[in-house]
Length: 409
Ligand SMILES: [Zn+2]
Ligand SMILES: [Zn+2]
Image (cartoon, rainbow, N blue to C red; front, top):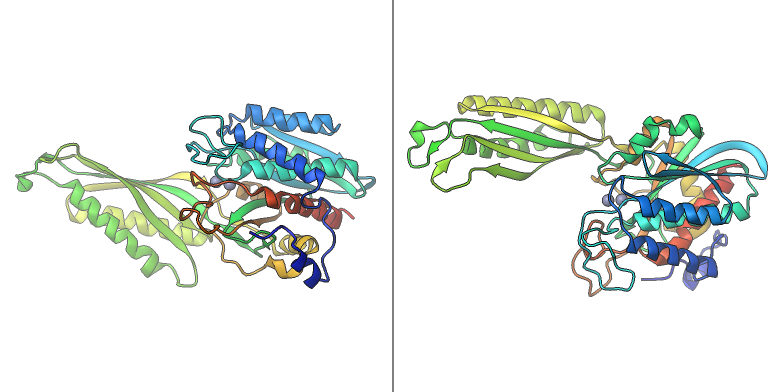
């Protein structure tokens, strides 16, 4: 992997301004030490007690005032600029995943079965770096609120912070998020004008029939066969009902039925995930799914029921704020290193709740391409061998600092 700003980038890019926190500086080394501590102490959603204590201790050491306890372990630190002005929010997530880490480096997880496999240790580190730097260099106009949220991984931590009064207590004119992105090269950022991450809902289907001896199928009403037809028919919805210019995914990923070869069970349960960007696509797909489940089952003599567990809405940037992010990122890494045309991801993000409650943008910072020799997907998010790339944290924190200085003028 190339360095955050290699000599080639520096000589070919005339727009490049110096990073507030240079790569390989003493400040960067301090950030790497924070990151390694956080990586060694991963905690699951709403259990980020050591993590939030650690972040709070660094903030305290630098005399940064903070509020603790929103959504249990959330922290909001605030720094006033040297001049009066507006206010913005910058957000990082703190939680880890229930994954057994397979890495063998010195900073591997000390908590068995838990792992920072999504890089939230790096996100917290970059935001902490920006806070410490801006406390010492507060030549901006207004207030920055540094939001450290719990439970991004399916726990609705961001939504909970909003419900508990995040923006009433800490009003923000706009709010910003950043996620590391494996596969995107080190030294690059990606900024989407509108959709970045998809809406996500869990599909729960139960097909009920009448079980009995598997050798006497005429005596039973077979829910397994109905379920198989339902799985197949659901796949016609995206291909035949969603416009080719729009996106949706229906994946059935869990099938539970029966316990022995010679008994047809009474029920089969199908579980999966639904993803889409536009709310109207979600409404239409869900209507079609209800119709498919009910009518296929009815035609085969079984009964089908379907419900969706509440998930995350789509993460949609406001173009005006996305442009501000792209401009600030360009000042850190050069405009040629800020991608504006990457496809959005069908993954989902809790930051969607924060963007629905306020306005702003969420961007990606390159975590590096998969290095040669790594197992396939070795550095991808939620993988047992993933690790946040320390090489990028100086540029990430410098982007936050640049964004503050560009917006709060
Ligand atoms: Zn994740
Ligand atoms: Zn994540």
